[in-house]
Every structure is written in C-alpha cells, then in structure tokens.
Image (cartoon, rainbow, N blue to C red; front, side):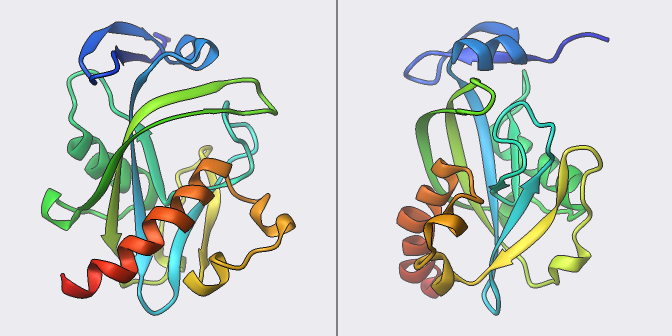
Length: 185
C-alpha cells in the first residue's frame, strides 16, 4: 500500500514539494488542513471524538470534521469531501462559512507527533440531530454536542477531553464569531 503523500508548504502557503504524512508529523513540516465546525443553534457545537489509535491526539474531542488537504485539492474541496466521509452529510461550497485561516503548531505530548499546518476553519450550520451523523469507522468513536455556555466555563477535567488547540480556538475565536457574526447571516 502506497504511503499517503501530502504537500509541504512554506510560510506563505506556497507548495514546496510532497512528503509522507507520517514524516510530516514526525518532523513538524508545514502542510495544509481543514476543520469544519458543525453548529446547531438549539444545542451548541458538535465535536468528533477521535479514535484511540489516531497518530495525533488520540481519544480526544476535535472539530466535527478535520482533514489534510490532499495533493491537487483545495481547502474548500477538502472540507466538502471530508464532511461527507466523516459525518455522512452532503454539503456544497455555499454551505461553508469561512471563519479564518490560521497558522498553527502543536505537539502531541502522548505520541510526540507535531502538527504544523495552515488550517482553514469553517462553520456549517447543522440543524439535524447528532444521532443522525455517520461515524467514520476506524477514525472516530462518535460525536458529542456541547452547549456554548458550558464550553466557556469548563473545569480542568472537562478541558482535558479536548485537543488543547481546538478548545482554545473554539473558546476564543469560534464562539465570538458565532455570537457576533452569524446573527447577521
């Protein structure tokens, strides 16, 4: 089986070449990723519970959808493809609300892997039930919905259930965006 290759990029998000995904995370090479955060206004933000054998941040809560931008694909194309693969929900580019494009780096203290990426962050307004989402076999354990007010007041034990940079992004950027911008959309 051929190893998964991804683009490596420079500090301006220009493609420099390709490398194996495993080496990218071992060396902390800069690459491209997406997150799609499902927001349900009645209930809160939906998080994906990562599988226990993931190479980075196993068994923690992550964005609803996340993935690497594959060679030749765009951020938006990846968001659409990954949303269907990871949740079973079909969306189009017009369904995506861009929040930000961030440059982030984080080290998983459990596995030692480094995730150094440009990441486009999107919101998708999801009006269905969390129980209707299809879990991608082998990649996730399921989904959890957390009320926005609760996310702002978690204790340390509750915070430890999230990938630290995801929790930080949700509480500093995503919730602010939801409260200040979406009321006008």
